[in-house]
Amino acid sequence: QVQLVESGGGLVKPGGSLRLSCAASGFTFSDYYMSWIRQAPGKGLEWVSYISSSGSTIYYADSVKGRFTISRDNAKNSLYLQMNSLRAEDTAVYYCARDSFTGYYFDYWGQGTLVTVSS
Amino acid sequence: EIVLTQSPGTLSLSPGERATLSCRASQSVSSSYLAWYQQKPGQAPRLLIYGASSRATGIPDRFSGSGSGTDFTLTISRLEPEDFAVYYCQQYGSSPQTFGQGTRLEIK
Image 1 (tube, rainbow over the protein chains, first blue to last red):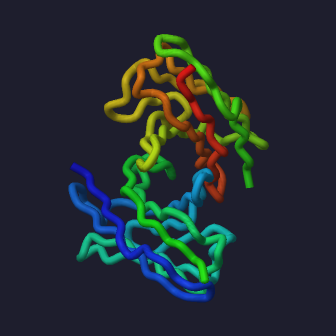
Image 2 (tube, one colour):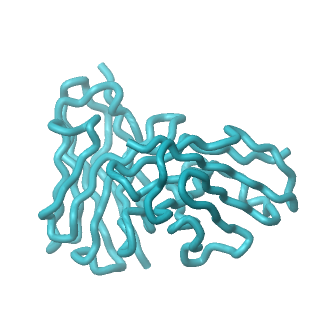
């Protein structure tokens, strides 16, 4: 069955960096676009970034553009999010999600990893 | 960017009742590219509906979606205890894809 397992979250000071990972299994990872979506505590969902199956096409939300970098390693079935210049407003649970074949909606989600930006 | 407004913010109903959740877009959602998700406390969202009206794999037929243009609806025909959760709509027809703020469905 499809599994997405995030890791790498934690507490970081403002201005710091963190790298999130998402290990995928149960499907042909290299066939699918993948995304990161976040959810601030008690708040709604915010799409952060997506990457095409080959990694050649990447988009970011304006709120993270220039600070976050999405990447993937299809040989390792893994998705990454490098987060730099972190701000308090980046505090959230970060989910990796698989984009469906038929549109930019998300048919499978990981359990999420919490990133807390605080001094 | 397309802003999605969900109503009501909170819906209080009893098991067995019918739930109607609304999602209104600030601009027309192209090709009815609208999805609905369910989220329970401490869990990741789960895809319910895509393409405004197509049920995702394994979703019971008491869940149905409808609408087009700027007005979309998620209907749960007969509420089961496990249906009480937060529901989000998402449009994916225009970049950036955006989510509504959610409707909390609570037990009355």
